[in-house]
Amino acid sequence: MIQVVPAILEKTEEAIREKVSLLKGIADFVQLDVMDGQFVSNTTFLDASRLADLPVTMEVHLMIERPVFHLDAWALPNVSRMIVHYEALDNVSHTISHIRKLGKQVGIAINPGTSTFDIKEYLNDLDLVVVMGVEPGFSGQQFQRDVLEKVKEIKKIRPDMLIEVDGGVNSYTRNNIVNAGADILAAASFLWKAPDLKQAIADLRDGIQK
Image (cartoon, rainbow, N blue to C red; front, side, top):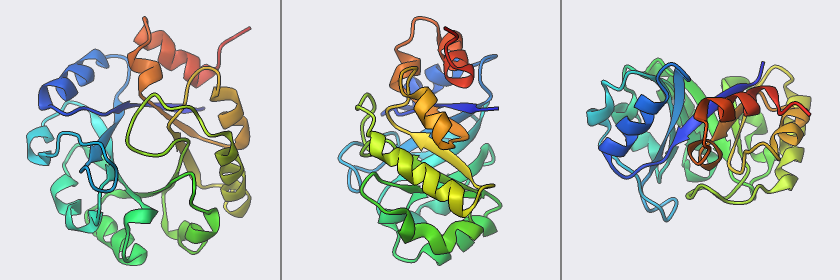
């Protein structure tokens, strides 16, 4: 079954908590986007210690420069998976090892311009690959369809690899993404702008019945 992960991209603790509360009884796993204004031009709430009591399990998507220096701070008890960007890493193997030592699942994200060849040697050490459907930093961007080939390439190399597509995910792009081989759909603007959040999640999970 396709998993849908609501993505939370907010600048304040209050806004993060509000969105988590809206998901109560609807979703028990979320993605928390963390941006430092350096790796991407946008910024989000960065005080990890304030979020350790959020009543939800999370994956943290670290869209930050040199994430290895921030892994310990974000290895919160309610975080099960840590995602770092290949483009931000100085030493990929060291970063993977560090996340493992923290007891978290490991994900690597690749931007639309990054080749799957760049991460091929690390695939057996990962729990997840996140294929970005847009340039990271801002929600609401148009999906870049050529990234679907990356999903297919990764599945061909390692069929059991979990692949998450993040960015530009909506009811129109959903089927093409899933048919390419994605297992997890991370969505922000499509969900948060929907008149019915629960139904929007269902639409992405099951596809809109015609």
